[in-house]
Length: 211
Image (cartoon, rainbow, N blue to C red; front, side):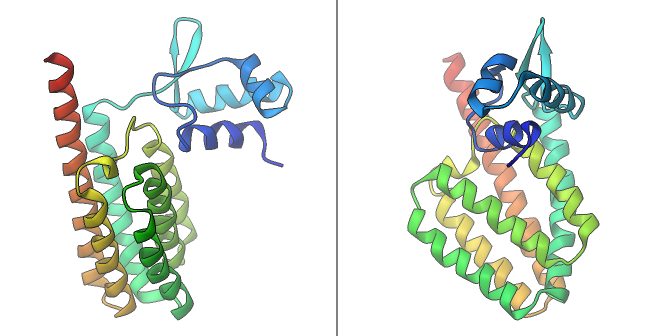
């Protein structure tokens, strides 16, 4: 059974609790069927990790500002690119086939941004594992945990879902060809396009709120 920390973190990652949502100790204990003490300890740990922040006496799910978003994508691009390059060198034939299968299976959920967001996380995690570098995987887990603090997925943008899967296909093809440079380039392009899409969406939504 998962502990309180893992349960709360998973709920944030899956969008059950979104940036700005207030987390109440008693409600979390009841939801997850655990006592309040481990929930309190989990909340303190998540606050230390900047996943939660204080709002008066309450704790809310943190929100990333523009600078934090840019910093996160910069780190993500570097680490993901390294993972792709190492995967091209170390991935087994079985791992490559799993990655290729994910791309094809995900075409069945085009038009469902939330399902695609979950599938996207699985795909990237599979590349991390295929790098066969446990320290890199640990660092990428931290980065992707912070990604959960984004209020919405870039995959909801018009046409981004189809393009994303095409980009995933290019990454897999490079890994399958054991071309580290091409895998790194394809992954960097993918992250760059995702960041650009997110910036455009943030600007559009800000404009709508002001208008």
